Amino acid sequence: MIALTNVTKRYPGGHEAVKNATLSIERGEMVFLMGHSGAGKSTLLKLIAAIERPTSGKVVVNGQNLGSLRARAIPYLRRNLGLVFQDHKLLFDRSAFENVMLPLNIQGYDRRDAARRARAALDKVGLLGHEKALPVTLSCGEQQRLCIARAVVHRPAVLLADEPTGNLDAAYAAEIGELFRAFNQVGATVVIATHDVQLAERLAPRLIAIASGRVDTLAAAAA
Amino acid sequence: MRAWLLHHARAAGAALRKLGRSPLSTLFNIIVVAIALALPAGLYVALTNIQQAVRTLSPEPQLTVFVALEASKAEVSLIDTRLKEHPQVARLRYVPRERALEDMKRASGMGGIAEALERNPLPDAFVVDAADPAPDVMDRLRTEIAAWPKVAHVQLDAEWAQRLDAVLKVGRVALLLLATVLAFSLVAITFNTIRLQMLTQREEIEVTTLIGATDGFIRRPFLYYGAGLGLLGGLAACGFVWTATTVLNGALIDLSYLYGARWEVAQLSWRDSASLLAFAAALGWLGAWMSVARHLGRVRPR
Image: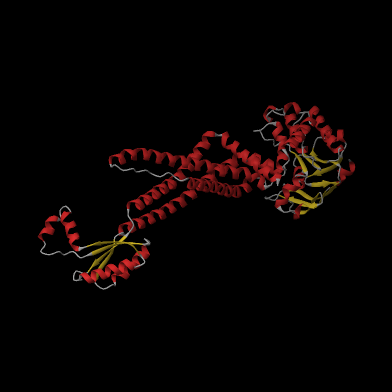
């Protein structure tokens, strides 16, 4: 499903966020990219979502080589992905419901069909009672759940999450972990970048350790 | 196709809501656009009216054929026949030299001079209405008749109308220049407005890009916004021009009453108004398109 081969990402200024990384994730797998802040986990996710382009190496997602993908094709690639952001990236000028509707509007869903799917997604994350609420009125955990609802509403094949439990206390984090498990169980490939060890213990995914931009094979073997 | 229409309908709806969300700034934008459009539209109305007035005031251009003083009666009647048979001559009026002198005596101020003359200095004359009043046809007819024997001089007496026509032509060129400059300003206004819009909606653009929006999807509401701004500005401009002509007509009624005539300024026609609206909307669209093309890369991630 996702394959990185000898991928290096060097930012302007010379900082190498990812160094010669090679990894492969199968369809339907749940994988955690584990490592300290600044280890390069976020950059790996951005490379997979075509938000960043690799300086060298090959990134293949869903059978498509992102290096040879034209800029016009990228939106269609992203429609197969669900992105959960650490800072949620919700739109604060519209309701929870409209936020979840956004991916469906982009993809041209019929309004009635879209509304049904959006309610289903909100129900799944336990926010159906808040559909008219503006994101500012939601708690941090609720905002994160709303972000997840938006990421899964169009049933993507791959769910990418960057520190989804970053600012949450343990109880909220556990709730969100269960959501990811549920999506994985219905067949979605789930890739989560995190340093939350408790979450990893709870979900028992395949672990890929990242340390200063390198895929740490030793740690992976130990896990 | 259905999805495409749906996208467009939604984009248009979003643009309308955006126009309605900040009514005051929208209003000011519309006024600026309207002024940029009302200036050339008003000038256009003025020019059209002057042209119309000139056409009604000036009779069809005529040729006056002056016969040589020494011509005999027979020679004069020969010219008369030739003119009558000429295919380009529509109407003909003969003014004998005695009548011309009588007219001159009756004309105020000239009577004394005419009395003092020992003999009649005025020639026989024919006033010719041509079948085709086009200036070049008239000119050719004049040269042709002037070459006939015993014809002293042929005068084309519509020269002032031609001069006015030339002045109006200059006016039209000036109008075109003004319209071009203001069209640029309209594009610049929408360009800048859309740029500000994009800056305030930076987050929305970023998020929609990240979840799979195409450039077209992001661009569309801005294009509708630009076109909508142009259209509303065009409507307001039509309103300005309509109000101005109506007020002017109100003042003219009193004036024309004093002169015992009926003068009226014609309004901007429906067809011209429609083309003004279409033009304004197209310019707004263009400005928005240029702005999005220029700024999307900067606002959006990567």
